[in-house]
Each structure stands twice: as structure tokens, then as C-alpha cells.
Amino acid sequence: MRMLQAAIVKAKSAEPAKIGAALEGMKFDVFDGGEGYMRADDHQFIQPLYIASFGERSAKEPFDEEGSGWGWRTAGKIEAANTVLPTTCKMNRPAS
Image (cartoon, rainbow, N blue to C red):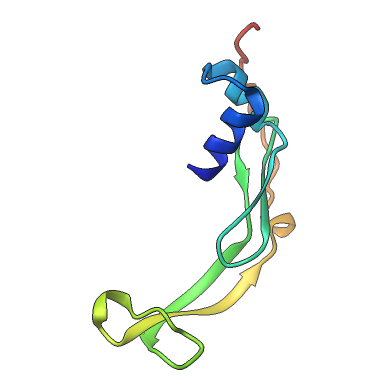
């Protein structure tokens, strides 16, 4: 939703075709660090991939999930560039 809002501001319009064009190639900071971007070829959002586990919290996991005393711990992170797969998308873009 934050990226959609940024695209509307960039496009200076709420028209879907203009928003779509504004999204193409847009970079955006993702939660928990890192940067993602909207691939222009198919509007796939490319972002870091996080692997997490759920369990008892330590001081490093400040968020208490639903008051359970447990929280999420990041076990690994794969950078966005290493998650990109080729696309065969032949997206039809609306005429401007």
C-alpha cells in the first residue's frame, strides 16, 4: 500500500494505467531492511526473502506475538538480486 501511494503521487493521478507506468522500475525500502523493486516486464515485486523461526524471545526479538512471550527470529536472508527468476510474461499494457 505504501508503494501504491508513492506511485499515485509520482503519476499525479489515480488512473490505473498511469499508476502502472509509475510503478515500473520503482524501488522501495522493505520492512526489516533491504530494498525491493517492481520489475517492469511483468510488475513482479522483487524483494529480499527472509527465513524466520518462531519461538521464545530473547532481547533481540522485541516483538511479543499476541502476548504469547514468543516472537519471530530471522534465521537467514536472501538478497533480492538472488531471488530473481526469468519471466516469460507478455503483459499487454493499456494504450495511453
